[in-house]
Image (cartoon, rainbow, N blue to C red; front, side, top):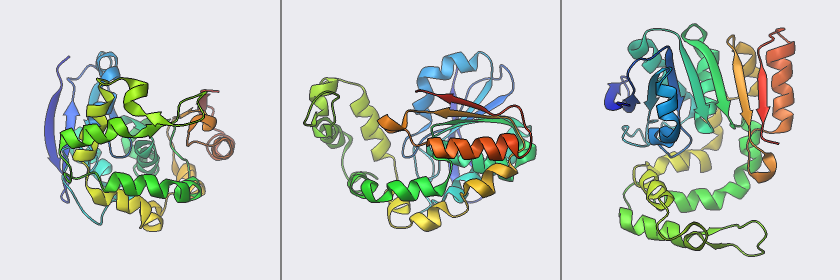
Length: 270
């Protein structure tokens, strides 16, 4: 499988993206918050056999350019729409995970002529869910912000990741990640690189500017505007999944019943 990286100028910021040679219709993969296109690496070979793959890094993340103060969901959606319009030139399929899922829904609602179908991997379906989890997320977000953007070397970040505590099923106390995952687990370098390449302001956007960041991402505004097939992949809320049962029920009504669309599919891990 041949994958090449290139850059695309949206007119506002340069996006880094990966592309696999055409083997079918275009499929655009949108990654989760503060990761990069390589988060899809394990599934790229299978997908590349059937699709023409594109996987951009969001602004402020990976190798894409930074745009401090402009990390709203709408900014990410605008970048994606420009990329679709000017670079792909034909209706595409979208898959988004977490942050990428929220962006994918906004793109599908705002650029219906450019989207053939959209799949959402465990993303909150409304800003209410983000607001509800905001208080308990503050400490984690602040800690991540203080580490990213080149403030630490990669080696320092790897050591910090290894010493970070993680909850272990069946154990009463958290344990250092190095004890749980092993000293040489590749996940440490992965997480450290993600932080190293992230603009600290991408974390500030979801902590200190949450209302502005999520403005316009309302379930009763976004979902009814979507006119393409939708696949929702729901993780178990009991183990940290962000797509709630209540939101799924609303989605069924708004996408399925309201418009009598037979192609809404919900896949749950429960």
